[in-house]
Picture 1 (cartoon, one colour):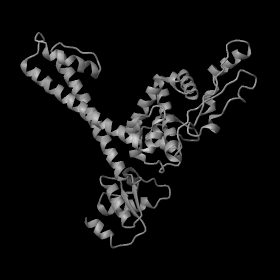
Picture 2 (picture 1 turned 30 degrees about the vertical axis):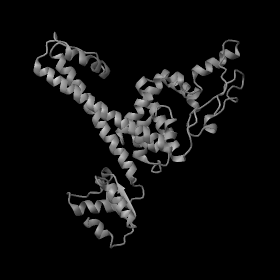
Picture 3 (picture 1 turned 180 degrees about the horizontal axis):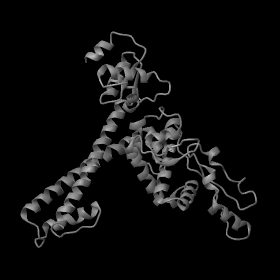
Picture 4 (picture 1 turned 90 degrees about the vertical axis):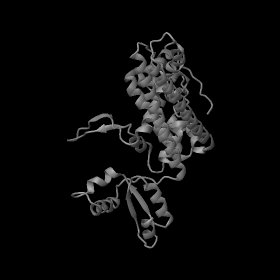
Length: 360
């Protein structure tokens, strides 16, 4: 490329680029030449454009933005990260296409008076019988179309299964993925997507920055010294946000199988908030835990508590903040009415909450 031939013969302190298609390839190539390269998100460059758009004006805006001390940059991805990200993009397109094919088959059959239960598995089970049923009021042309759609649905299922198998192999081979798989609600798809998007998480200083990048923190519209928080921002990476929220819903459905600390946290927030709000809150917690696991290299250790029914129950409780850094457990959510009432009942002679600590 002419650009790489040009930069190979010059020596500069810093090269700034706008994030776009091919930016990671150029960033790695320029680093191999010995240059320092920083990639800026396009939305952060736009405020520095003074007037109409041209190549010179855009370059001036990038040069101004790259020198800002508080500017946020995009980490340059490796080839392995780009390969895994490409697999996730293609798999997601296959999933969307499979859903479209299922809906189209349901719509075509509904026009002929054939209704099916919601859910892909119900359609896949009923479709062979519908095509073989001679009494069904289906024309020859429609039978052929539905048969072709059924074949397309099977092909898409095979493609998605192959992609899932590749992600599972990667998650078993990658040490960071193996540590992430221990976090509740994170499977091979979420673990590999997280590695592909963030690497080791070094781009974020703390878990809250990562959860804000995923878009699971409240939007803020404060003025005049009055703080006003609204729904989640939904900024950043929508694909990761969707995976975390889906994983959080799965954890809530199986809350009784979780560790004592997480189970108590889920029960308390479910009593106070709508189930959708509770799911997003749990997804936010999972995202922060996942960042700690990635950034520190530590293994996930579930929160285990010991409660004694005595006058100093709080003193006998093992603090998860001290015992388990990767859990990021907040005690203000633990010592709520359900647990306190059970402890008080134990003091008065009733059934008490007496749980032995599980081995860590």
